[in-house]
Length: 261
Image (cartoon, rainbow, N blue to C red; front, top):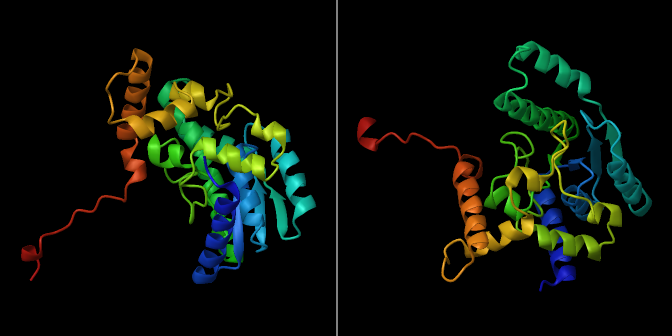
């Protein structure tokens, strides 16, 4: 049970305080057509600060959910500005320069290309952020960014602020319903859109967000659980450990003071 209205007002107030403290002129974020970016962009728009919404198609050239949400925002808020920049040619040019034809179908190269898309979007966001003195807003939630590390390092993980970073996927859904985010987005199967086969998040994680949220809360309690739940905990723990490098500060080799004189 969460207090939706209180959380919504708290996030909006937090955003207003942060932008004032940072002396930035507005916000910028990418729209994917997913529930996380839909909720985040709506919360940011509710600050009434200038908000630039960026569509950056690469493989999925016709994202109807993304376009529906942009129309939803434009009808409700006067502070919304929208740009669409197709990054497909940039993606193709980079991949052709870097990859050899006989390697392209190997899994590690497919993963590199998936992450490339996310990083191209990050540099595009920061290009416009630099021009306008805007803050780049991340759309990651708690389970993705701090549970299993389901994001691209220096891609969608390269942001200035995370307004919904302390909300689970279930809580994101509750707040989205409260704010009347269009139902087609609320009911859509979560997917990052970085793969040509359009695999879902569940396909990649081998578990649902609900299962991973449960594991995040219960990863130290292994008493009287079923084999299925034990497997879910193992999936969570393995992902959490594997992706630690994304979730912690960059390790620094600290030189002993006695070595400096």
